[in-house]
Amino acid sequence: MAVALSAAGFRGGLCSGFHGDWTAPFAGGEERALLARKASAAVVRVRTANPPPRAVPVMKNVNEGKGLFAPLVVVTRNIIGKKRFNQLRGKAIALHSQVITEFCKSIGADGKQRQGLIRLAKKNGERLGFLA
Image (cartoon, rainbow, N blue to C red):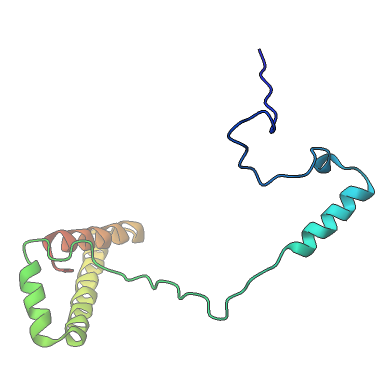
């Protein structure tokens, strides 16, 4: 059962901005081309002079403050300064990687196993709080 309402018969009135006829969207040939040109001419591209700045990603340690040695690492970093602390940490990591490499040479492990051991050392360091 279909019910038809007309705009005049509806007491509340329609709140529509459409005041044309329903054949306009189905126009063919020249009328369609004219409508397409009018529509493309009506599109206005707005560019702002200064686009909003992008957020700079900040790399943070997800284990910040977690782990057995994290408080000691944080206190040491605060005492000797961030720059000197990062230099010292880099030297310690490089030395540990050399030890792992020498160990792999002595047991005859290949490069893939060596990389796996270095990754494992990093994960353990994160869990223990050395990378806090």
